[in-house]
Image (tube, rainbow, N blue to C red; front, side, top):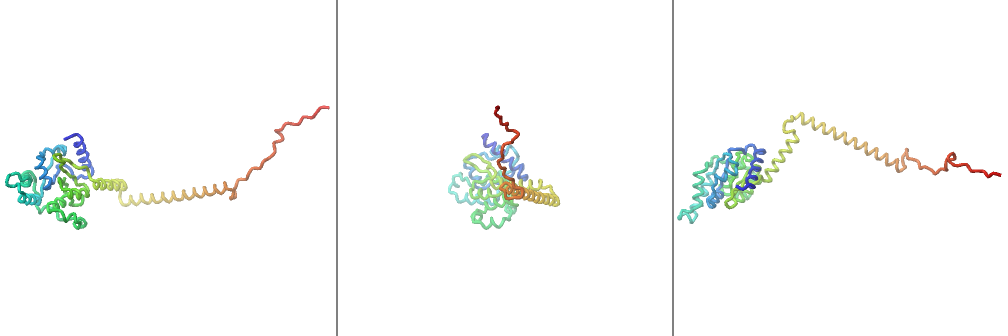
Length: 268
């Protein structure tokens, strides 16, 4: 792995360790059918690449039963099955041999109503729906899966959810995507909430006390500002000359006689 990719992967893992405590080793990698097929086609040593990307932390690969069923159907439809080069069959066999299988009964069947009604979700295959359910259960990936997929529609949908790390293959290069904007926005809102409530350690009475002090300070500042405005108005009236204490204009006066020289008288 090149230094730049390794550094980016370390930053991404550090982000999730700090902001999503449930995403900690041993990591759980959920593979979909498109990723398994791409791995076979590009002859990627998947476990070796995952180990390097995950900084040699322990991990386990998972595959949903519906993904294996989908690969089996594609293998039957493929014309290359007879010559032994059926990538769908090989991908399915890899899932059976190297991954833990998530049976249909273990897949959560809860979705928020908004997502369930979208055309995007209805267009997903059953395998993609199961992966989406597993990765978004509880709102913020409560089951702590890293999802490895080449499906753009599924990836875009998961990027809109907070704390769902994504793996993908760029040709034969395994990439761990940087945290999505949804993850960063969610983390930022949580940090702002912590600052507002002193890290969540303030009681209701303490928060009410802080609010009352803020209101009192605000009233005090408002009174001080009003007094300053009144003083400024009085100064303005005095300078213009329309007030009681208007300054009188100085009139020109003659010279001081004591400072003048006496006239000399002519001698006779």
